[in-house]
Image (tube, rainbow, N blue to C red; front, side, top):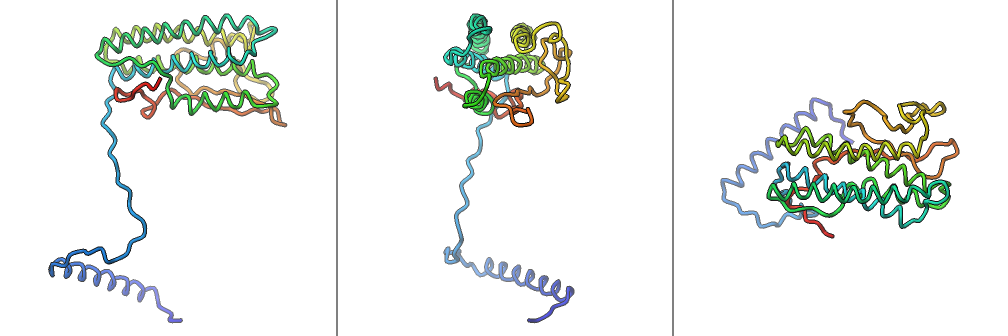
Length: 269
């Protein structure tokens, strides 16, 4: 083995680089044409540029409409499971009323989008469903879950809060003041839905304001969890309890740039 000092290695590296530059220059000057004789491993994929997408008032309204359909589908799934029995039997009527409310909200928001020259959007938000709702439903309906009915209520509560926060965030982005007023009116109704569901999950006066679980230190579900204005992520604890008593926790966040319903997005209903 030939031992080279650090200085010699640097000198050789410099010579190699210089030689390569000279050869490259000579090749260009001599008019050599690349005949693809040099083998290469693999092939670089062609990059397809993304279509330009602008976040307009219509895009924000279409996105809000998609969340209304997420809520509708969540409630319809809850009814199809047929798990609201016993003390939760009355929840069925609440679910039907909330489903009707969300349909009215979707109709109203889509009408506003159409007035702006956009197409209405009557499908749920696929990304929100894939990230949050579908995984939650899978966990809730797994064997061994001792109380899937309450977990469904918890999911509905999270979805209502997600909708309320979405409308609240949209208010600061809409350019038309009249649209802001319409958005916040609907958003406050979603917040009321969440408050009623919170009373099912944590009933009584102790469930009105924010409190913490003495064992875990985590905040309990409350009808009025914080001052109006919070856009923090929404924690959803569901599923079969682990040996230490904890459960799977999902974090829901309002739609971001990759989950907005741009005008190029077509409803696949």
